[in-house]
Image 1 (tube, chains in turn purple, red):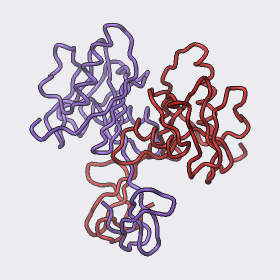
Image 2 (cartoon, one colour):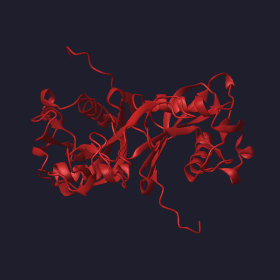
Image 3 (cartoon, rainbow over the protein chains, first blue to last red):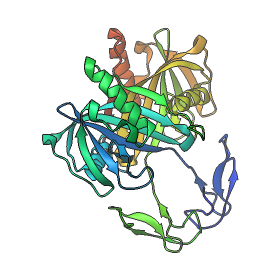
Amino acid sequence: MIKFCTSCGAEVGLRIPEGDDRQRFVCVSCETIHYINPRVIVGCVPVFEGRILLCKRAIEPRRGYWTLPAGFMENGETTVQGAARETWEEARARVSDLELYRIFDVPHISQVYMFYRCEVVDGAFGVGPESSDSGLFLEQDIPWDEIAFPVIRETLQEYFVDVTTGDFPVRVSAIERRRPRD
Amino acid sequence: MIKFCTSCGAEVGLRIPEGDDRQRFVCVSCETIHYINPRVIVGCVPVFEGRILLCKRAIEPRRGYWTLPAGFMENGETTVQGAARETWEEARARVSDLELYRIFDVPHISQVYMFYRCEVVDGAFGVGPESSDSGLFLEQDIPWDEIAFPVIRETLQEYFVDVTTGDFPVRVSAIERRRPRD
């Protein structure tokens, strides 16, 4: 939601700019058009000797639940760089051999998730400031009842199926809004 | 570049918010943090009977040059929906069977491109308002010297290699800033 123009500080109003087909926030004074676009979340499925690196969230939302290292892509970086950066920030792990693995669209919150499979260099990891714990988990040890988000659970489930064949197709699907009682 | 707060209209300043590690535009009055994130461009490689649907750009940048239908992803849609929408808007073609094909990171302009291979329904197409022409091209008829952007040329070149094997791996790579004399 935009109330004021980032260029001149005047108020903005919703209208359809010339040549456009949908409402945008347009400054009533300088006519700057303020676009709001989806955001990209980049993350990793970090693997070491058959184990997956997970972090326990120290921050909301879903504090105390386990997740794959992931976060908002920053300006000036590639998706690969962003995924590696998040893995360092959240799990203090360096990663290599990143391969695109899973894309989720989450249109009701205008987000696109991109996960890369990768190797944890030397199996070394730690706990970053946004995590309260981290660890390498075999499939049977994954805390399935304490996974933070549906995209994480689905990615992990698919990974443990794919690893049995060694074939890791890139999948794209959408996560729909969950009903309130879910 | 953000000069004024979108929430309250006061000035913003660059500083590192608590718990962050990089400068953000933060409102000096209400302390709202204004993040600026990369944008996603979604597009298609629309195919009909071995021909690729291209559009001639009627707008800058690169007006008069040929491109694959693509544009900024909008809030509230999936990448697949956005790619199909852009193909309708620019080439008046309905598409089906969208399969993720090519991702480009363009970090110096903070953009991520996502192209989907797809079929042109009934081979029908037209010319949208941002195009001055469109057409289905066999490989030998592609106007290679009049392609609008490097990501388009590279995607087309890869497609015509992949189509000889029928294997279309999803590729990810980065486009670096071009030197001024290029």
